[in-house]
Length: 226
Image (cartoon, rainbow, N blue to C red; front, side, top):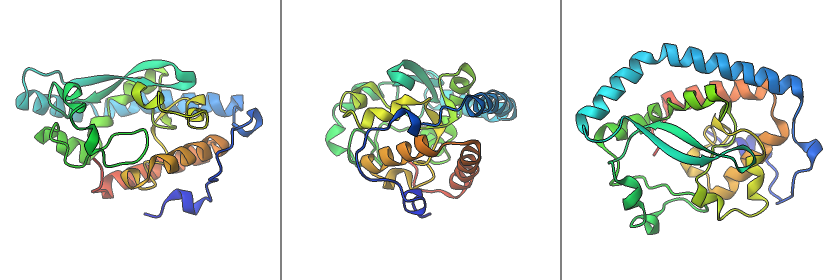
C-alpha cells in the first residue's frame, strides 16, 4: 500500500502548529467521543469469544505470566496512563530489553525488532494479526485513548522528543492512525511524526472512518506487522 504521506502530501517542514491549525471543533470532538464509546462497547461484546480463546492460549503457553500486559504510555498533554494489550512476550521482557536496544530495526525514538527473541509462539500470531491490540478498547472506553489518533509513546521515547515531536501529544492517542495504514514498520520515526501532525491538522469524522476501514483492510491483508 502506498504511504498516505505520498497520497495526501504530508508537510515535511518542522513547523510548530498554531491553535487554529488543530481541529478542536466541539461538535466533532463530541461525535468522535460518542463513536469511541459505542464502538468500544460493541467491539468488546463482539470480540468476547476471541478474548476468551486468546486468554486461554496465553495461559497454556506461559501459566505463570498474566494474560494482559499493562504498560505506562504517554497520552494527551503528556498525561501518563496504563495501556492494555494481550501479553505476547515472556514475563521478563522489559528486563531483557536493555540487552536488545542495539538491535533496533527502526529509526528514531522507537524500538522494533522483527525477530524479537522475547516474543512467545502465540505472541507471534496475535501480533501478526494485531489481536494483541484488542484490549485497548478498554482504554478507549475509559477515555484514555480514541479509536483513531497518534499511537501513544513510551516514557523513554518521549524523553528523546524535540518540541516538534511533542506535538503528537496535543490530542488523544488512538488505537490506529495514518501510521498504521501507511506502512507501519516500513515508515521511519520522523515520517510517522509527520503523518500524525497531518492527521491533527486535518482530522474529521470522514477521515476517522476512512482510517478505521483502511485499518481493517491492512490487518486482514498484512504480513509485515511486528
